[in-house]
Length: 496
Image (cartoon, rainbow, N blue to C red; front, side, top):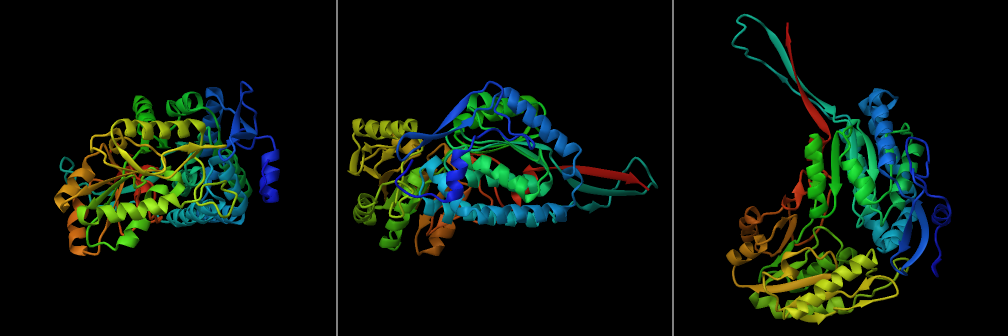
């Protein structure tokens, strides 16, 4: 399959039959269809997985409901849930090499990035969430009920698990995003039906197996790969799902949100972005150039909060763009199994073609490319691309490309920088590069995004909530804030 050697566990997993995971059963799926799994670095199929249907989703939801209502899981104490999450995280860490290789083969990213970033962040996050299992609490109140004079009351609130969670994840960080959903669901006592993206189903199935190995009762975690319009739509509209959590495009997120509203299902949506990287003229030019390049070219630009819009104060603009152009032009593209590879392919031919269309359209609009601009194969590669002479209203500036394409524009003063940074339907992330902390502190409240990084970009920590303003979504992943999305709060008033 590859000129590069694989860990024996990776090869053994690939060689197996990949069925659904519903409870502790491994059904093939109701209609027997399969999804071909393509290696983005070669464009070749290397395995296949069962393709779940609406009927399979219904079975998985029923299994999750049973586990939530009446199983060993439903009777577990918080400290037992905490221990299981630690055991789950330990198993992911112990299998990091194999999981990283599966992520590489499935998604295209390098093994080193997958292991050092995706998997390590997932492990850290699960361990962080394990601590929350024993810290979910309500509060007591002293009621004053005016129409019952002389009566005494005891009032309190309690947080309870929301129930069955439908989790739909994107293909850019398949394992990490799955753990962002699983962590709070498992900490609070919910059960999960996980629907991975059809392009990247492998690590989700492996996570389901590791969860059973960790000791989770059957039905707590169910994994149903399938097509978005079939399995994903069925999960979104299922009347017995209590909460939906989705990471993906804004367009699909709106469809899921509408389906959730029809059922009054609780929903959180982590959606698209077009994040600005703002460089003030006092910034360290070398640090800013390296940081801005990493902000867009990390993970092939397939990051919802990628720094895809670069705004540089005019004094630094030409030199900074030249430095980033040099960095981009020297990035080595290749197979993610090759340790020397600095950037892998995009996830699919569809995504490669989409990104190339944006580049070509920019050229017709008068934009100028300083480096890159072409696709190449075999596989689904797009060169790191830097574009200048772009109008703020251009689709290159306003629309999410989700690839290694940076548009760079100058600005004159901070007020202009804030205005054009906020001139977007999105508001997921932003970064400011400056050594003038007074200016930075004044800018931060004016930037309309869920995260603002200073002298870094896409720096994530489990304790910090992540999510967006405007069209970038509803709710938050990570941090204490996510506990609210996986619990219901109940008020109790007792006459004593």
